[in-house]
Image (cartoon, rainbow over all chains, first blue to last red; front, side, top):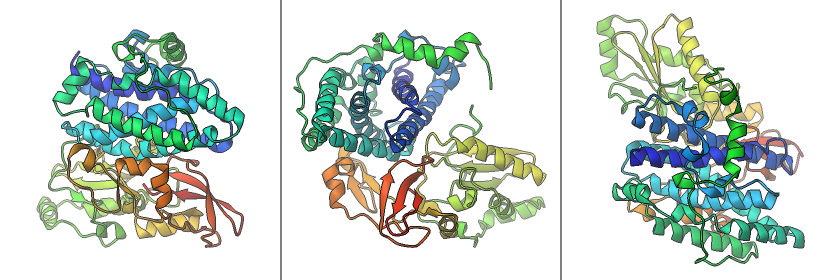
Length: 250
Length: 233
């Protein structure tokens, strides 16, 4: 597969899988405002997914459209990072997953606005304000829960520790990522990781949370299609209609 | 699933650019045509010109905020009537996932069909990204009368130049890190959002995310009414 198509699918798959996870919480948020925020973020991510898939499908030129990419691929064809497919869990789990992702996503999108690929830069420019809102909200909630009651602090710290080993995959570059960096399409890993660590450290300090060790062992494999068992269940629900009635149209 | 055509080629030089950064005049109803386009149209003897098309578009309400038109909202980027009579309309989404874009596209096509312009080509343009600065003053006034507080400040520009060595951003620029830093945020004085019901600026945010992606939820601490605020973006 062409590296750029592969890279675009990774961007789209990250956004789609997280969007689908957040959609499952629609109507179940802990407060009305949170419920609306979850759905708003899910909608932004779904819109971004479509922009990435649309471009990937055009470059690929194999007759697949955005729906086909979303509904007609199996788990091993999905290239999202493992972090995004981790379960919603309790609200600290949901928000810590969001915060780890949002921090990386924000600095990545900011970097992509200078991409040598004009179309990628345009999509990034369109998405930047959205992901800024996402990160402001998830950072704020991490502080409120971490620096809240003894119970909320304990749950938030537990979520931070449990998800930490999934936070490094986005900085583990393979041949596809390096090809993008070499072509000036994507920002380098070390630049993003420095920004990510600095922002997480600032928020964790405000949240009275202990930051797990920077050199901890990190999970990987999602980008290459090796997923945790959770993705299968997510896709089974998301793809049900197209699996039961292939090529059904609204 | 994709009503608007994906990513057109760069704007045609003959396009009448409506809403480019810094060019706000055309949106306020004092629209004047590019002379070249006018001459071409005159030569073709075509009675449909861009100004007429725009007047039709100004009648189309935003599907989610019907008090304002899609012209008021600033999402119609360019209108061009080609020599063969085809009408090319370029629109830009407010948000990536805005579900109204397909409805807006269909409404534009329907409106032009109703005026016997059958050949309508819709283009979607992502850059420069739409901002609330492109909303017309008339649109902001209509919003306020409708009970939605209009955007109160200039949209914030995130300066990403330090990240990738690009050109420096202009306007009220902040660095990428500062834009999401809680300490940085608290250092910046926030503009007063006036209650659309009683005018008081004694208001506070209830939720950054409201009933649609473009709105936040506020409440007035004087008249106690909740209200939507159209986010600066």
